[in-house]
Length: 213
Image 1 (cartoon, helix red, strand yellow):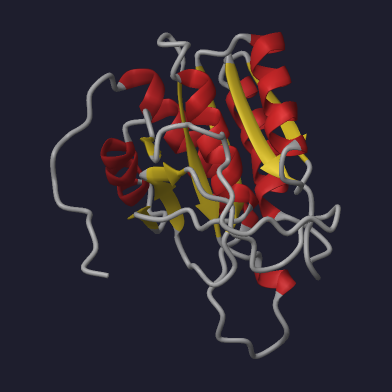
Image 2 (cartoon, rainbow, N blue to C red):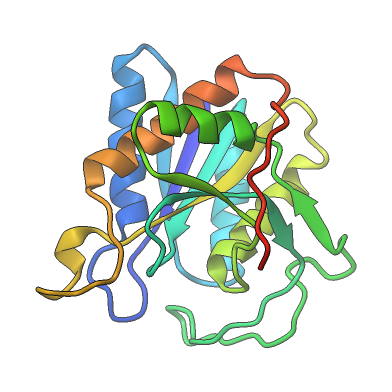
């Protein structure tokens, strides 16, 4: 069983491409014969983690790929590490704005993704989809859910999971904007590539995909 998640819209955005792409990837993978579910998470600290935990308990997946919007990025961003820090620049959809609070009180400082992110990056490149390994998932609800996911999976060694950030859709941007974007079809296939890679890759190849800053 594969569990995919995306977020509801937040801020001034009317749509969230992460949820649209998660739904599209669910259909794509289901057509390939996989058991897969997609769950839309609220863009709310706490509630999003509870909804994810409930979905994991209900579905008992083998792989979990959570996704979110990273407006301004132009690639499918394979997140490497989640940190135990909520530090919201803007309020969530319930008006909460935690500052310098732990996602899980007393939890480890950070968790690494258990997905084969380097192999997934290589397969994205082969598929002609722009990808990158990202060293930060921010400190908003995306990092919150990434950390909550990995904290939950720490006691479930049979399940692998991680987080993927996605760009804006072209139609979300005003005409003439230079902000990076990506068509929904590419994001959808990108998520599917990550899932297929995780299903067929136990380890992860070693090649440079780091950052200087």
